[in-house]
Amino acid sequence: MDNGREFVFRIITDERLLVIIVGIAVLWRMVVSSDKEISTGECVLSAVSLSIVGWLLMAYMYSNSRRETDWQVSGRIYRGIAIALIVINLYIAIYYGLRGCGCLRVEVSELRDLVYRDASYVLFVMYYCVTIAMMRYLKVMQRNYRLLIRMREERRSGRGDIFWIITHERTLIVILSVAILWRAVISSDGCITFWESTYSGISLAIISWSLFGYLCALAIKVKYKHELRRVIQYIAMGLCAVNVYSLLYYALRWYELLCRFMGEAAVCKPYVPTPMDVLFCDVRYVLIILFYCTVMLLSKHLETAYHDYIVPRHIRSHESQPP
Image (cartoon, rainbow, N blue to C red):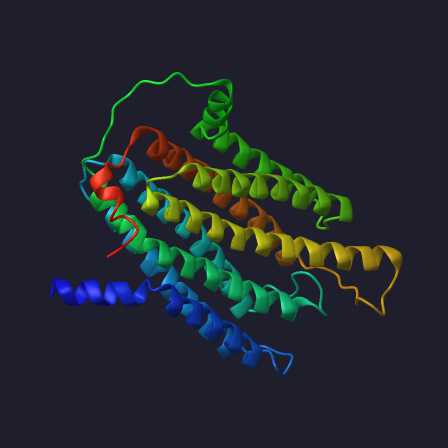
């Protein structure tokens, strides 16, 4: 029975299968949007497919975070990934719920909404596939590193102190609170101007790509912990998918607002956003900030794994072969 489960696990987490799944997602969106309109049934199918994968992944990560192990940081890493999945899953549930009931009318513009919806679906599928590929390395890391604790006291440098402050829970609560207050202020008049949208997009870009750069640098520093390095790389890839999603939204949104500002109605048809459209913009911004705060907290556990645990030589020679 265990051998059968291990075989299924290896198939599910195979990178080649996940690339095929992403290709199927691209093909699916090309088919449903070929008539320039997405029906309610097609929207429901997209939502159900994402929801099933997302919540099953979250349940798997959460169950492993509660598993007893001598390498406690592995449980924290599992828990951080599970929380990030909860945020993404909630966002998808809210998004498709509003789409399905017709409350969400337009996101970026009436001319480019379809392209944005197709790209969003594919990017979320990519995020889930990256997380699935990460599972085999998380499993090996939790099993092989559990007795490899090296207790040591190190004095933090100035850079380490800054990192500790940024990733502290209270700092992240302040960031999230500021984001909520900012969106409440700019949407109080029922309309978001070009400059308000620009400030929101720039703030997200600074946080997201700085965090992506940090994860890439951390992955480079990890030399002998192959599984940990691969986990960091996959977390960075998943973060990159969300970053591209956020960047695409603001790029299309800015283009649409610029067209309206310059009076180019022929290029981009103007529209009057409904209160629900504005509210969802606020929800999107806050949830994406919450996702980034979760990844910041997760990065602290990855930093702990890098500094406080070692892999002996007799395991280094075999660690490049996941089960």
